[in-house]
Length: 378
Ligand code: SF4
Image (cartoon, rainbow, N blue to C red):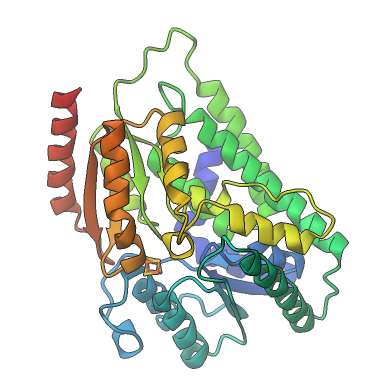
């Protein structure tokens, strides 16, 4: 499919995309960490926001800066900076999630001299009135800082225009996910992740045009109503910064269908639309508070479980794979609750622990055993 090829091209050559965008527009490229950082505000300032991503290759550069017992995402992301792959950046921002990512951010600012650095305070529990007050204040401070940095007035109208582009993007991604509810989804799990990864580093206006094209192509691929399904096991992938397409390709090659996900390179990034509101900064804060939560921000209510339940039902999930990043305590806390939730629904779960380099052979064996168990139980 032509549109899918274009997204794949960006993922494979994402640094070139950003560098060319910068050369063509004369504007700045800002890297950011975590889905709690509102990239639409970076965009409103006239910059290209690019999500920092890992490469999943062995490396020996991050250990001098952060502990080897910090999670793979934090080490892999920092390694990309230390290896010079993000030299084109004009700044880096983070929405505070956990101490691991904080250290990646601090090391990046201290040792890589990216120019502009901004650490957005995000309250640890987002479900209190005080948290909302702090989030709205945080948006205002970020707006002011970006305005100062760019020398561009970030008015309410400018923010609303950026929100239009961003919410269009979210709606289009939701439309693509809706197609995955079909008996025979017209897009695989690996392809869907490629689309999300590309939109995280692209100019969203361009990404939206390509998403429209992709939607039309996918709808053209839908089987007629005699579709009896492709007979593949329908899986949900749960995790944190799970950006390893290789693992999804492995699942595809094993005849498994990842029909939905709950992680930061998927639903946690784009699922909810900015609510209407007179003050667009407050509306951005409200979207972040209401978005599918990271376990870091979900105490004490644990709204995450209701979201998982909804996805399981709507996408008719038959099995769940939890990709646990090594040393990530926040996600580990939720493991017993996820297991209990899925047990109640009669859905088997497989927990895999991942490092920077995904142990493909070992995972293949475990997934094969899991698939066999599901087939026997079906
Ligand atoms: S939440 Fe977990 S996976 Fe994400 S950055 Fe923190 S420790 Fe790493």
